[in-house]
Image 1 (cartoon, rainbow, N blue to C red):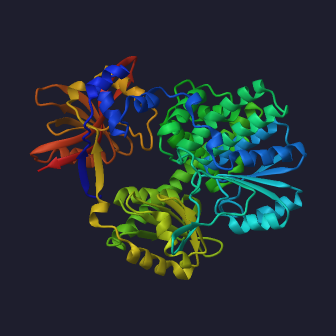
Image 2 (image 1 turned 180 degrees about the vertical axis):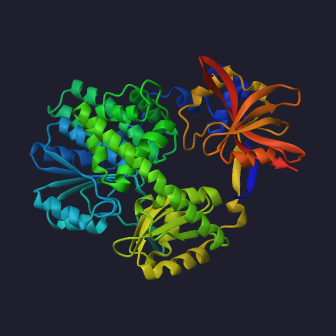
Image 3 (image 1 turned 180 degrees about the horizontal axis):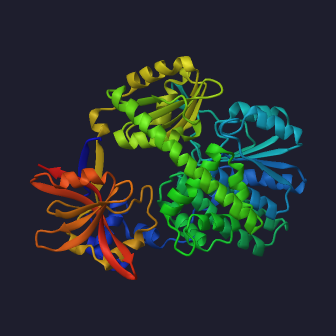
Length: 583
């Protein structure tokens, strides 16, 4: 396990004054400050922002230009093909575009590349197939920004190409700095482009797609191809799919992302989409409130599983299902595939951890070779290993041609830049700061491991897990009323994590280990004045119980309060996330 460093956030703001202005407790104001908000206006936007306050899609460079080109193609009756991606963001983006174009009566088809056969994004085979099918215009979503050669081929063949993406723009190092390498598309909509002045870059592919469709619908209404009533009926339905993509692509729940997800989750709870409703049903989620957790850790993995073990086209078919029978069958298939994916992942993680501990303990960047691992789950395994060791991790598997890999990183290490520096060893790569994909010849594997570590400037301090506490809070304040007020900060997720409170004067008594996997510990938390509450710890429960028996000077707990309902009675309990014995 990585070393830990506990940090208490300290902000100097007039909490009481803001508390009165916002009509919330000073504790809530402190939590808002800890999320980087400084003014009443910023806090009010965070707490009460509405869909009407999302940034204008017209601020996205090339968005209007691209949609004007697309509208002209629609009026000319040209065949249009959407090229998506096989993850949840790609599937939801594809659905948003296809549903919108079908609303306009367009002859449109959608292709989601096969993860194994096609790989990520556009490729030559997809372009040749589009030509054979008489396609005039390619519209990408959640991909395209790095497809320079492929788009050049499409243009050479006389096709129109509109790129909508959100990934980092490829670049080359020149004397003056970095020079973007942009594909020769007719329009490129990507907030990450250097000269794009969109106010918030961190939106997912599905959100970019939704914003483009807002513009297209505006133009279609102006042109008389669509009524405003129809546009206003369809566009709100797209928010739940853009929110789905935002959550599953682990976008920060800040700025307009937070508003989108908040609204999207509300709509999902009463979704009109037959496929989504049945996916919730087979996972036992109907009848309750859908949360960020349900989307990110229950529903999303089912969609990702079909892209990993079968074809993500089935995820799109689920959202497009017209009958309950079709929706139920597809939803059940996706759920079963996800169960298979879980079993495969568990085995892969065990072997990856063994290698990391026994073979590469001194490496700063872990490169794990799992030849028999299904390449589709390499990224999940890399993420698990990164969490365990607090180090960047690349998991490499055998592929049809050479090797393929997925990488997950820590905040202190920019994974895409790391791969850029060894690009001569790779046949293909792309991604973000924290996640990337790549392929390489098998003979280059050991050289990749060596050079990544030689280039790495991380220090031991970077491998220390930081436990950041929001407030030093006596457990007496963790009341049911406070838990309900914390609901103002939901939905929780990336960059808006659940508040974490800490205390170093508590005692743990009467620990009971529970669960088939012995991964739950229940106990009593007792303050120095005798005030006590029930507590729960999820993880290595036997180790937790043994640690609580050890002699110590004090015990530092990081926790958040939650309400547990049992037989109609609500009771507040502490969920202990981390603990530190001070001996």
